[in-house]
Image (cartoon, rainbow, N blue to C red; front, top):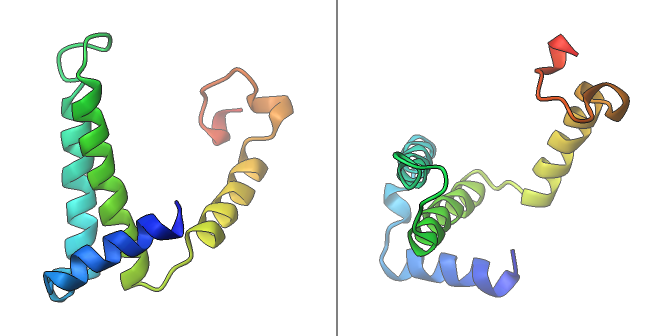
Length: 106
């Protein structure tokens, strides 16, 4: 995410004095709630959906995720790369390519 976007999220929260409500558990709950709203976009059809509504719900997930990163002083690049290293070890290309099996079933 661009630094201007991150700064905008932080400014929005700061101007409203909402950081006091952003405990790790509240932010985790908010991410799950917004992710459920994103899933709701596909509740009755995998093919017929409102792309604008998807954008809005996905943005909410991302904004809360950035707030969570800030609250726990985590670096998104660091944690994503750490997880990708783990995933690459669990799902080697020669075993996982074209398969949706969990790593322990490869």
